[in-house]
Image (cartoon, rainbow, N blue to C red; front, side, top):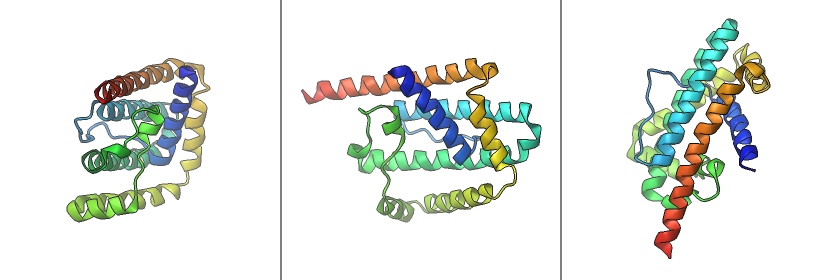
Length: 190
């Protein structure tokens, strides 16, 4: 069961990469102080960089679209981390920690949260706009479909099996953090 969940999460993350792009090695994602979120962010960043390297090595003609995808995903991760920090401060009860990694990573974000955070942090509003523009531009790129197909087929390639398994094991570490947190919360509530 856990293997199936982790395999689905690997596929889900690959799809996210396709939709959101990659992470630049020189840029950093802000830390939140939450061990599960910060670990997940690092694991995702490391995985995205490996995917980027694979694309550039195996399909150099896709580098320009992979570069744009890389820039977009960096902004997406920064955006998600800002949202997580806001929710952690204002609505910690909305962060799902006891239903698995997928539920934890997919924040229930509402427009009113964006409005409030944008008023307090104008950089958040700019980041939100930038992400929309990057997404729109990337969707129009001529090689985006080829990049998506290449990434989708990676998980089937024996040559990358070890890397996919490593990513899966790293995700399992995040799941352990979440499970430990759930046990700790349960103990406190008894």
